[in-house]
Every structure is written in structure tokens, then in C-alpha cells.
Length: 305
Image 1 (cartoon, rainbow, N blue to C red):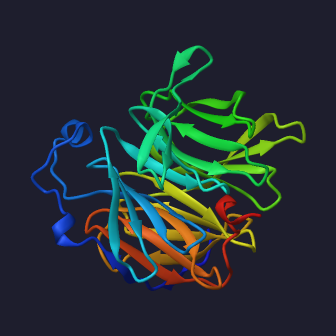
Image 2 (image 1 turned 90 degrees about the vertical axis):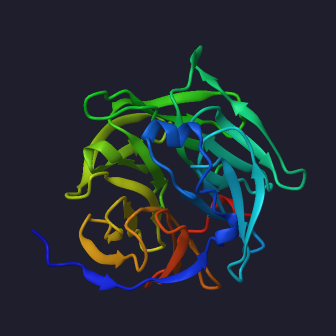
């Protein structure tokens, strides 16, 4: 259908030290999967000082990586942190599968629940989140949804923190999400449909029509984290395929960014001095990869004045 995407290489920016491995430790997340893992890196996001924050989903840790690639464990708690984004006021919001939307106070080293119920019912299990430029927070409530159990949802928490709106439900594993530059389309990775959906946001904020924007193939998982650049190109992590695809605004595959480490690519964030470096969390080997891209990423909400 399209010409083959051009391959782009990656290199290792940072590697979780072996002294940080928790290979013999268990957790609710690991027990549900009947596996042991030393870590499972997810949710990369940059603060204004150039530190890259991420989570260890397998062992409920919040990690910080300095510009030199040195890891630090900021916090370990009883939960299942998955997505992480930073507010422009410095607060760190965490999508936790067990506890809902959490807030980490980095200076105090504490984490507490912020949102645990919507529409008079509990959340199924949050996965990822995205701040719009006006401070509205979009998040996916994945739970255990799949093709045979399409019960996942996408919500928006207004910037005032008071109202939560359901944008779409009956989804088979809603995961990473990001808006286009005009912020009139919300892209959502639907892991168990191996697809990325486009939710059209009307001027009044409502979502009236959704479409399947990109259909992937292969991998035993599907799309995970998303990011977007200034040219409107969409970076899509293909979980368990060791790949990040870069698609044009028309959905055409431009680049295939291949992991030089393991196959469990999970999520992405743009960073670097010129914003053109794409950082990729890879959970099999516990590394953060990087690749140089043609265009800078759209600045995250944490960097907006």
C-alpha cells in the first residue's frame, strides 16, 4: 500500500543499573502475568531541568534520569504506575492501574490519590495521560479491556479539576494518547485492536466522530505510547515489536525506528537541546533509547509558560 518506511537507528541513552534490579521481587502486576522481571520501564516525561522521569510498572517505582543518563529512585509505593506527565506548575501526575489518577509531589517525595471515581463509579485501571495546552487532562481507563472485553474508556478532566467527561467507551485496550498541533484531534492507541483511533474534538469540546486512523499488523501486543512532532508526524510505539513508527499527518509510514536493545518498546517522549531527539523506554532490558528525528516534538505542557 505504501513504500517501505526508512529505517532509523537507535542508541542507548541510559541503562538501569543492575543494583536497581528487583529480579526476585514480586508484585500484583507480575503475579497477574506469571512472570518475573527486574523492571518494566514506562511513561517517559521531561521536566524543565532536563531530567527524564519514568515509571517502573513491575515494581511500583518512580524513577528520574538526569541529563547524563544516571538513574535515581524517587519513590517506591504500593501501586501500578503506568503513565506519567508533568504539569507546568511542577506537579507530577501518574496514571496508576490500581489507584486511579495520582499526584506525586517531587520535593516531598510523596504520592497521593487525585481522582479515583468518575460518574459515581470506580475507574477500571488507568493507563496513560496527556495534557492539552489549556491544562485539560486526557486519560485512558484501560482496565482489563481487550477485543473480547471492549470496556476501555477515554476521559477528559477539565483544567479546573472539577468536571470529568467521557469521550469514548467500548474500546479494546485504550493506551497512549496525544493531540495534534491544532488540538482538534485526539489520537488514541488501541492496543488490542492493533490500531490508532482519531477522535475529532469539536469547538465546544465534544467528541462526535471517531475513526480508525492507522491499522498496524504484527506483534502480539499493539500500539502503546504516542508522541507528535511540530510537522504533525505521529510517533507510535509498537509494543513487543522493538519498533517506533513515525507516520505523516496523512497516516503514511515515514520511518521505522528500530530498537537496538529488546523488543518491549513501551513509550516515547521528545527531548534534547533542539527537541529533535526521541527517547524510548524499552522494558525487556531496562534501557532508555534515543533516536535523532528530522523535526522537534511539540513542547509538552510541562514546558509551557
